[in-house]
Amino acid sequence: MKRSLILCSVFISSVFGLHSWKYLDNQDYSKWEEYLGGPERSHYSSLAQISTDNVQHLKKVWEYKSGDSGQVQCNPIIVDDVLYGVTATNQVFALDAATGLQKWKFIQPGVPTANTNRGVTYWEDGEDKRILYGYNASLYALNAETGKPVGSFGERGQVSLKAGLEKNAKDRYVVSNTPGTLFENLIIMPLRVGEDAGAAIGYIQAFDVRSGNLAWVFKTIPDPGEPGADTWPADIKSQQEVGGANSWAGMAIDREREIIYVPTGSAAFDFYGGNRPGKNLYANSLIALNARTGKYIWHYQMVHHDVWDRDLPAPPNLLKVKRKGKLVDAVAQVTKNGYVFMFDRVTGRPLFPIDEKPVPKSILPGEKAWPTQPVPRLPAPFARQSIAEKDINHLAENRQELIETFR
Image (cartoon, rainbow, N blue to C red; front, side, top):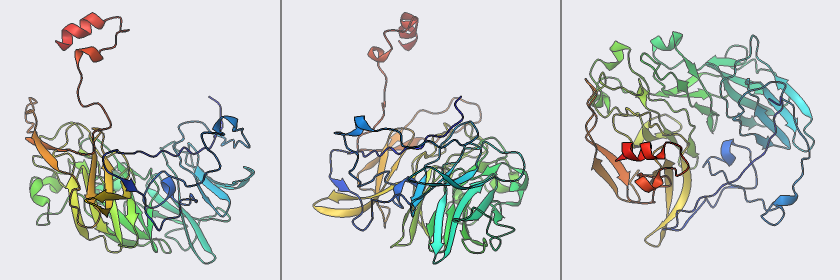
């Protein structure tokens, strides 16, 4: 494997076709200072220097050798002509964006860990400029100009991402593989947890960017007596068998309205729910929270009682959708099933009808699948929703056997 990291950006826009839409009027799409391009996670740039007319003439200007090998999922950001990113073993680097020359590199003590990491978060207040990123179960704050840990942040520049979790998370797998989302002087962190029985519960946590202090926690599996607790067995937390319901994919934020939109994963264990009968809120949900306080605003659950690992795989997108002649501030969420759910960003009201469709019962002993699942009427699914005999690969050597099995 070539031990180098080649950095590039691909900008993709999707058109749903049935109703006109656009991105936010007050957002600057010529910069790339946040994960996926901005707080609305649009993956879009308005820069027009590269086009379909000249893309074939692109030539490599520089190449950065990361010094390690492995899977790189980093979406770099560029601030003041400096490119910030993360290598396959979670080493943070800063490069001159024009030349590719390394300005600094932060290497954690000990043996490097090749956990997936999708990038960093940049924050500044005057001359105080910081890079924040997750490594294993810690959130680090680095000086953006030197790469040195910020001593006033937590303990020697880091805080534990288990700070607001249940006590039993102490010895359980917790990492952050996606950049946190900023709101003023808070960073709201996504978490990746285990998928097996006894996994940690992935609560949503906000930390003070300056001090590292825990500011608020939203419990994705509610405590007894809280809204949503009746969708679980009463003793679900004391059993310490069920975890997950974490937000590993990242979040989007409407900073003017002070609302952060959080997509969550399935409850763990992923493929069996006999010990967790019920809808299991707030797993597999898009949750709108007050970014300042963490207070609940609204939610919608895309999969009830997930036993298929159908968690929400991407950050939501903030956009405007024309409905009945008026532009509506919307939030869209894609799913592993190929659906796109679209909601009024403020109220959570679906912009298109969603049907609760009957689904087959589970034949697994002890399992009680939820009898219906939500299916949006629009936009149309972007992935295949059925398979017919004609879809079986005609080049398959055992095609006839596959056809007979299918029939």
